Image (cartoon, rainbow, N blue to C red; front, top):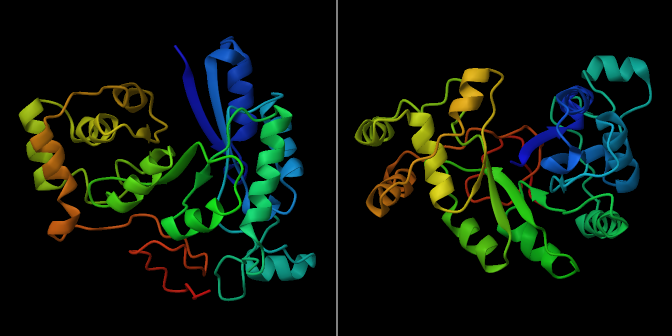
Length: 279
């Protein structure tokens, strides 16, 4: 059985994941390992990739994905860093928004991504949080089509148009925050609770099954062993129940759970970052 592990440099979990793989004794070829090219490393993809490979203790990744924006270089002055609560990986502006390089051309990031893909150090390349306008612009120059697009997906944010666009271009959708997050109303929603009761399973199983039934890769997150195991449970949903879940957002329950204060409009119709600016 192939085990899929997803990590990213700013989370500081790459060393732990690498050690866990080593301690597990599971052959590397039986593990599907994903990491993200962090925003501040977009000008030098090879360097960012090597940092992740070194931390993970592996010589290749199965999947590597960038976000749709580049982080501006962090100030070198340590006093400024402290005042801004900034860092090399998460530079911020004085107002607390993420420091973004507004002049960076994402096609250059993708060109470098294609290079590391061709080198064999990455088996597949994809993207994360890319909207249709961003993908459409990238499509004019890409030589390798992104294998996946990791985005927030759940019945409150079904992103039907993005699903159709990605399907048209053979881009596999991966759903993060499929269960919502702490304090999110998704799992306690009456409609989702009713569907769970009908199948005699948990709301989490319904939310995971919703995506699997639609051909979406699900990326649930948990640090609890019991929940990690239960997240593998999938049930077949009827077309009627999938349609019911698909319609929840249109019936007034639309909600995006994750909207980082990047100070940048990522091109999604529902993006409501209060610090976003047009470009």
